[in-house]
Length: 238
Image (cartoon, rainbow, N blue to C red; front, top):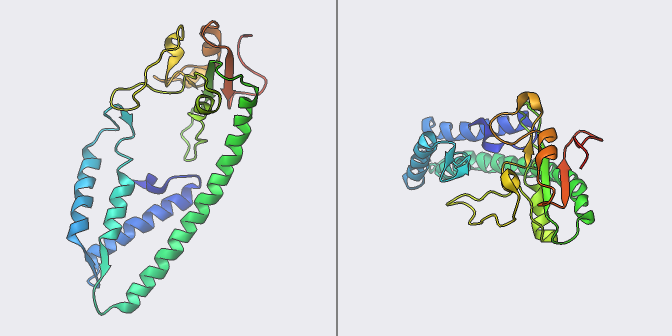
C-alpha cells in the first residue's frame, strides 16, 4: 500500500501516498464530505480483488499492484463536498492542485535523471550492427531498494532500434504473444536470463555474471551487452 506512488524519493513518495489515503478516510468521517456510491462501489470491489489477487496472475507479475492506482483514483473521485461548504471545497481544490503540481514536478525531475542514465547506457547501441543477436546481462544488487534503475528491459531497445534479438523479453501465454525463434540460445533466450545477481545472493531467478558469461552459446549470440556490471569485469574472456 505504501508503494502507491513509489518512484525515487522514498519519504516523499510515502508521505504522498499517506495524503491520498488520509483524504479518502477523511471523507468517511467528516460530515461536510460525502462519498458518491456510483464511484465508491467499483473502488471497493477493486480493493477486494487487490487483497485477494496473488502477485502473479495470468502470467503477469505484480498484477495486484497494477490495480492499486486505479482503486485510489476511483476512491478520490468519489469524494465530494456537501452543499453549503464552499470554502472547504475551495481549500480542497487548491490543496489538490498543489499536490498534483508537487508530484508532477518530482516525477519530471525523476524522469530526467532516468533519461540521463538510460541515454548513457543506450550508447552501446551505436556499436551494434543491425540484426546482430545480443546477449544482455543486467546486473542487480542483493539489497531491496525503494528506487530502481528501471534498466531491466532497456536491452529491448536493441529490438526496435537495431532489429536485433535480445534475451530480455518474456514469452508467456496471455501476456506478450511472442515466441523465441533464435536457434541455439538455450536457457538464455528469454526473461529472466538477462538478470544477473552476485553469486552469494542469487535466488530462484536469473544467474550470476561469471556463470552467464562463461556458459552462453557463442554461436547463437554475436555480442554481449552488460548493464551495471562491475567496472572492467566481464568474467571469463569472450
